[in-house]
Length: 399
Image (cartoon, rainbow, N blue to C red; front, side, top):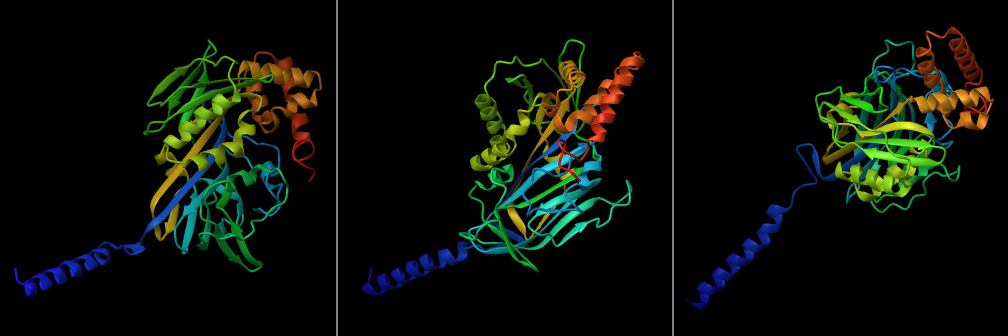
């Protein structure tokens, strides 16, 4: 081959090599999708099981006492005290991962629900006024959320030890929202609410102390865990996935918190959360999950989450993962006996162990005493005493 031909061939090879990167380099936004943007979200739906095992309407009889003062509220911090619903949507946090500065808009709708707390400042929270049960579905919208990789802006603080801050312990991209009062920086978008939506699981106690689980939806419930906490002892049992029905035996009170949290962490990671996200979620809620009593923790199917809580991010992320844990509180005979003893002894510290669930626990106990009018009157007296303390110390702070 002549030297001229070799020079032509080399030039052609070099041109081809230079062309390859330009052909393979994808634009940041293509067809409305940001190809290097990922969104992850976790949260909890808290309910309490009625006699038929399905979530019933209940009142926590407390205001929003567990959030930092900078969090914004619908009306005021005590508004939720009298707001009944079947579901308390607690601490969804939305993380963003982007290697470059990007601006997105976010909207979350809430079926049969009302958004009650949020941070940073939202562009709109609907409905702005609550008239009654026929109000439209709730929603919250952030029109311009700047994602700023490597930002070292100071996040708001205060209320040292508040469990809100645990959610920041991830590698997520910081966000910034402009407000009239200045920029608000955070590691995530946060919101909460109350809804009368139905949950996809029912859990009914059997005559033998077991729990009959029933999947009320069309999608498999990925995982269920029964947690029992009594007098400082802990037990839990992992029931696995539930397609239709399953019967679960009560756990022995011989477990350690570490083993329970490790199994729960594995459940969350298996659904798509990053390790630091799963640990942040557990750090946020572990004290609540160890409260005195019986409860189921279960992973909501994706279809159920999207039906109750439709999410729109624009431009769209290349990947979205939403992992929500349902908490279904169980009123077992052991819980009924403990609550009745505490009322009879006027043991306030023992009653505080059940805190916001006292109202539905007492309603469940009353429903089981129709043949005993004396005991029913006694339980109604306990319930009235709970109402008399509603939204006041020790139930949630003086109005």
